[in-house]
Amino acid sequence: MPEWICPYKNGSLLFIYVQPGAKSTAISGVHDKRLKLRIAAPPRDGEANREVLSFLSECLGLGKSKLEVLKGESGRSKDVYVDLPPEKIIILLKVLS
Image (tube, rainbow, N blue to C red; front, side, top):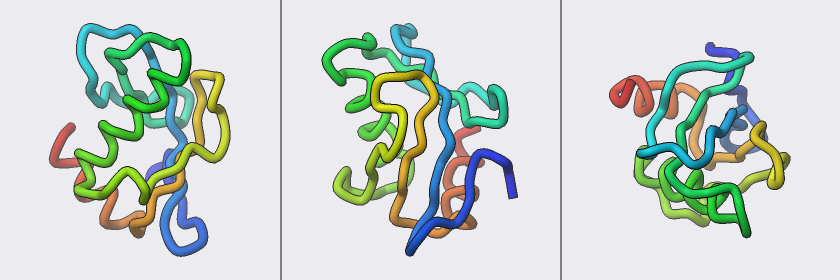
């Protein structure tokens, strides 16, 4: 299992590194054992956090209520809860990489 994901409660915990202010929103590899996301939204007033959750919910086919930033709301390193098992998330995100 990749280091950027682990089982947590009834779902998974994703360890994410966010690069806000990018030209487009996309997965761009791994940074410091975290899944790296380039986010088109700026890092102000929670815009980047909303974009992270929106992007992940679209990639994973989940409603936004099934995802939650548990740690790192004001930083680039974020821990995001996803209401899916790790194995399913890995399969869905590999299709995009």
